Image (cartoon, rainbow, N blue to C red; front, side, top):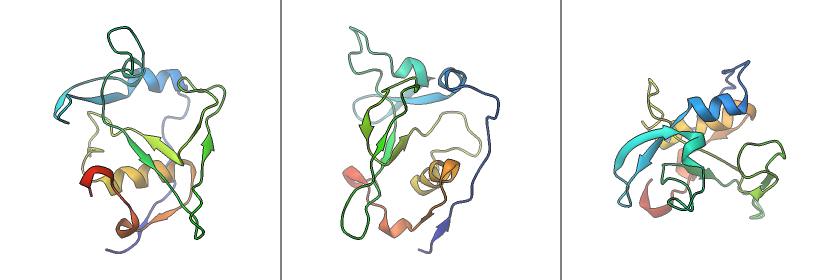
Length: 135
């Protein structure tokens, strides 16, 4: 496969994090990874007695390494709605329910969309490693 050029995208201007957390619909899963519905990103991340780790939903993480094997980490902003000020992977997000074209089509498409939002990267699909044999 060749290199996928990820172009910067501008969307959702004028919307707050809270707006997106309520608008964006995560894909809900059962424990066998079967799609069972959708709910807001905000609701899927609420910890409760019935859902101590939130509601099970599809998500992905990106890990970027330099030529010396060091992983690029990020510290989430203090004003984020979820997981404020936490050191975490390079970036992560969710394929969302109800998008046309769907964000669930290919993992490469989802990664490119996320990476192009605020960053300027080229992604080589053959260099992407998927956990649990997803690639």
